[in-house]
Length: 283
Image 1: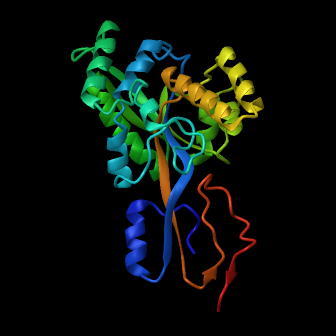
Image 2: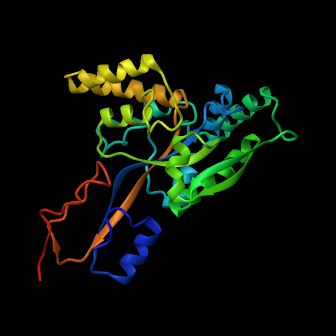
Image 3: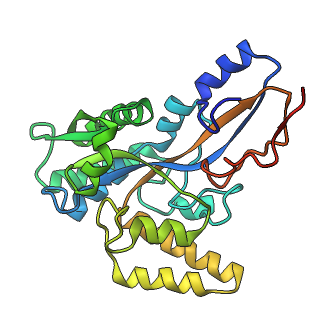
């Protein structure tokens, strides 16, 4: 059996060709690729500049290049149908940067950059920090290529794993390509951990006290549909505020030989199901 949810889509073809009897399932992992921006580091302390960066992102290109089209676009929460709390596509398209007309989005982004005195003859140079493994480096390269479209010249800054988490936790970066893994598909975990004021995993130090009150409100709402509506509005606001722009939600595979029985691949998190208490070998 492979390590759960660690088989990438290009590698999946290789596994299936070499082990044709293997059973493979491709599922969401509840891990998102996202842009982190140090909101206290000039010039990224300017909200308009952060908005321009969000408008420059071509999510479909990321998914086509890195996942052969087999990943998902969404906000903070895991997208439907597997995700319970993800915004519907029509709502997503109303958020800056999610309109599928990438050329229009980038034209708007360039106008913003030009108002900030950037342009073809005055470009913004910046290091784009990534963890030094392929899952971070590869999308980091794509991000750099896309930011060039709005007068931002990025240089890949590869950080060894032993230093990565402490470096971004102490805000020792300008911008970065990050992966966020969630333990369960539930707003309480996602919102409080990644966006609450003072949370250690809130790497961009986004802080909106009024919105945080809505975290509490949705958490205590007993009606499932009312809670879902609140979650959608919170998620929409997080994306509009460029708190931590979500670029894609990863799908990955797990493969196992037919004699492995009783394994259920989880869809709400790549971390769950590791106990294998119902798994046995038929030999």
